[in-house]
Length: 427
Image 1 (cartoon, rainbow, N blue to C red):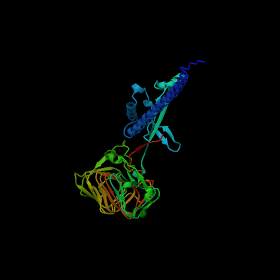
Image 2 (cartoon, one colour):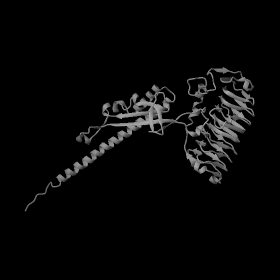
Image 3 (cartoon, one colour):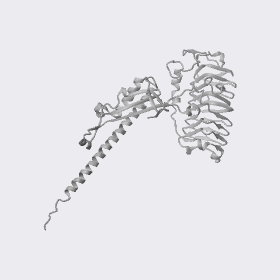
Image 4 (cartoon, rainbow, N blue to C red):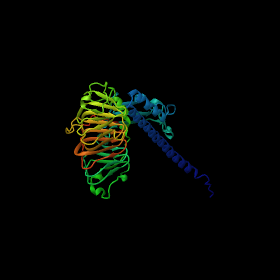
């Protein structure tokens, strides 16, 4: 019997080819959808962050437009259609407990962006093989929510762009933070209560003696990697201008009755009676110094243009803001006995804020209660053993700290701190 089997494999090959083509086509469809979904999410994230970042300094409409421009740079309209429009960008409040977003056009706290590739906007994602099954395109919608937050380190802690050197025999309460954008240096016999944070970009750069963690109880558990943009120090000019601008976010002191500044004549030696309570007092020093008498200064703002300030032993600031534009490393200096804030068990008011374009130095016996020091230059201090309860020190350079002291954490009573918002994704 003669048999001709030529071409026998062709039907099997066709079946195999069609099966492979179907699987490949489906994979192509799915990979296209995943890629489009990822791209859309990136655009939404980019726009939400941009909207909230810009809202920090401009009105809502301008912030939305800037965010939209950035999103369209990422996904041009001529190629992707109207992925995001102005109405897709909202400001509001984010509730971390319910994990929900509530629109509020006037809010600076959070921003939500919806991004669309849908048939209603004629920009849905085209399918390939699934067209044969009647699926011509995919609709994709993505959302992103960013919120502002204020790091605890800037609210209560020691934060330096350079080295933060805190020495021996100190105790740090739960919640207190020691951070450096370079590295932290410690000596020995320090105690870090659980919940304390000691952070720097690389925790391996921690500088400590050979006794190491054995002589620093709790330090190993407190270590965290991290780095901060010193946003608040970039806003010293804005804070200064805000002292006399009721529309500024930084004009928020209840003890100031009028934003209008009062010019005060310079004298080498000045006392509390030279300044007017409940007002903004401005002194132009012309590069000369001022020595403040050892008195209580309260319920006022003092701005010194080009002033180096000597604070006498026994000087006390309560409900008080002191600002100097001097950039000297000792632009604010006290030999001893300076008290910032009222010792009031972390009550809502009574604190003091000290700001300098230069450095801040207290040689001995500094007390801080619900108060803040912002210095573009170095900070150097020796604190009273039990005189720190609610303190924020931020330096654009180094912090050289104290020994034999306790750093208490309030969690309240720091409401007059000058702060800058940071941003994080929540949804």
